[in-house]
Image (cartoon, one colour):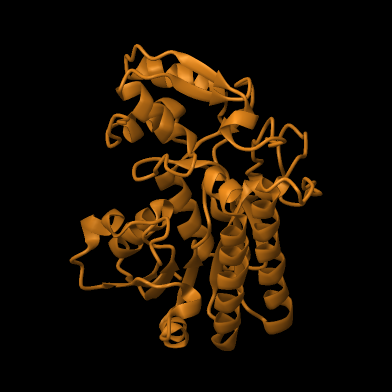
Length: 326
């Protein structure tokens, strides 16, 4: 979709969704946001709240009476609404599964009636327990056992992918799937276990940075505007339809090193505190040791490679995060 048109964004009051909405409005589109604000906040849309081209519906997808009309009016849909954050996933697995499966199923069914192109935001969590050094979109997936709650999130998002591709095959629904790897930046909250905002808030208050496990686990952190650029390009690219794409940075860092860099950049006196997973979450909690994406497919199809360095990501994020308080 190159010419300005109407776009529907679910989860548009969330961290990533609000940045996407701002970008779509800047590109000349009109936008409808559907968000129940269970994890998002209307304040995230404060910079564009008075824009006449933006309409915000505060409701669940499944409970919005105007959904069929809103979908039919859209030139494309970005589906970002989902349960997010490790803490939420572990503590509220029923909510996680229902949110991810039920809301997506309803949206896909309605979108299939008018074949509105839809981009589904998925997650690197679907790669599960694989010990590969880097992940490709056509890798086999290794999910942990059902008695460990964190894997319910991975499975629910993986079922979203299966369902979206089933609608593509059976109903001709134009679908793109983007597997997001650790997107970070302004407006992300540490409330649900997100590591970078937690570290920054603690460092600003000169309090200990709590590193779960031994801190040797590595991640690749992608700046939110890089993620948004990739999503926009995928959403308007016909060659992307019916395909899955990794979206993330390839700059790998251990969580212990991330904490140390936050302390250094913010000139904090904070110390690092190692916390066993069993104390941080639940007994038997499993984490992935590495989570690095291969993004050649994204680069080949869109011409875009996320490239904001970690140093800049930390600085830009720290500018808008308040110190930790009791």
